[in-house]
Image 1 (cartoon, rainbow, N blue to C red):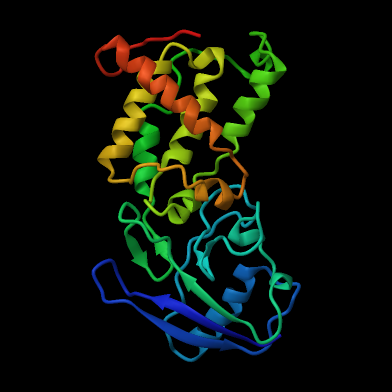
Image 2 (image 1 turned 90 degrees about the vertical axis):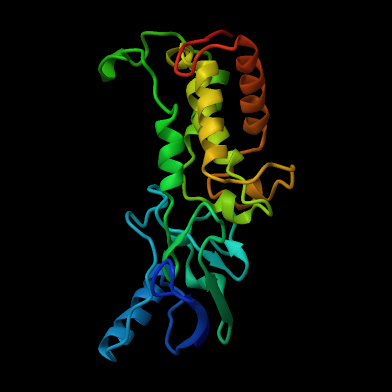
Amino acid sequence: MKLKLHIWRQKGPKAQGKMVTYEVPDASEHMSFLEMLDVLNERLIEKGEDPVAFDHDCREGICGMCGFVINGLPHGPKQATTTCQLHMRSFKDGDEITLEPWRAGSFPIVKDLAVDRGAFDRVIAAGGFVSVNTGAAQDGNAIPISKTIADLAMDAAACIGCGACVAACPNAAAMLFVAAKVSHLNLLPQGKPEKYARARNMVAQMDKEGFGNCTNARECEAACPKTIGVEFIARMNRDFLTGSLFDRPEGTGGGGA
């Protein structure tokens, strides 16, 4: 298939960016989207031009590294699919495809389609851990957990931190990401000691990083490649508000049901 790509090119964080058009005359429907970009980059390198920079690692939809906006949609037109799992059979011959980086002030552009998502790492560092010694692998079933709670925790833990929720949100809010990271620990017994402090600290760091506020647009839910629901935002809000009533120093406990 023959494609025309309109790609955002920007040499560095402070450089002036612009859209540049490229043609890929022989893309195969069996290629992944990133493999198609690999082919484009090989040809650019052969011509002595700078290849298009984009984030990627495992290319199996697990690591959360890949991600950019394809025709206005984070990760592209197929739901519950990361950019690396998107295949060219989702497009047709003659299509024009526009590629842009995540557009959010908290995700500064590094180069072209690659952005700095270090803000997510700092949010995790603020509270995404447990102080309880959980033991080795064979101790995993030592504490009984109901299937309902275990399933909810696994649903939240599915978040890969790709940033699609932020890119999709009209306010560039990170509420779904933070809620997933707060909830998957707060739901489990091992996470109870820091339950309320975790919610307070991670929300405070989220605000410090400059993410916007949630206005229930639910674009985050629609864009999430792991289909994480906004009900986790409600859980986090409850834990945050409850924790605020305790008025304890940052980093202390505050567990509970």
